[in-house]
Length: 136
Image (cartoon, rainbow, N blue to C red; front, side):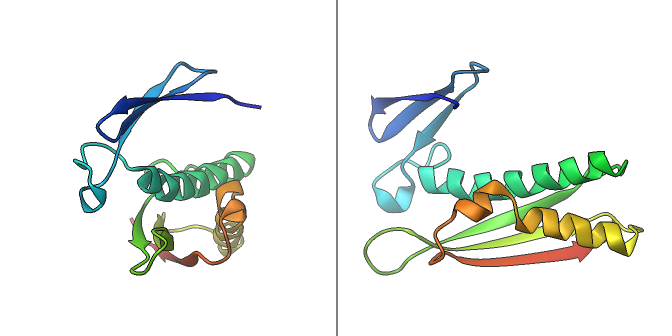
């Protein structure tokens, strides 16, 4: 079990601390929901969690197969529902794989990303669109 402590700082801002490491981060309500948009919003963190989890699990696969994925990157676009209740309705993920991978490793990396714990934890109503490209 990992504990994360969160304190409401006022003005729609929170401060979170990861107990095991002492690392902190701030959240702020987005501009389209009465906030300043001065930091990641909680729903931004959901999107960020998905992509960082996918890349991390791909990194584990790469480590086990002696592959160097340094520089592996991607982006995620968060889509909010137009109708109440306010929620994340979709996540569009794009991951750029390095060129020259053996096809079996490319497939293994894709499978790894598809089974990351965050993805497996998302509600099935969230539309996921994951695109892999290959290049330098």
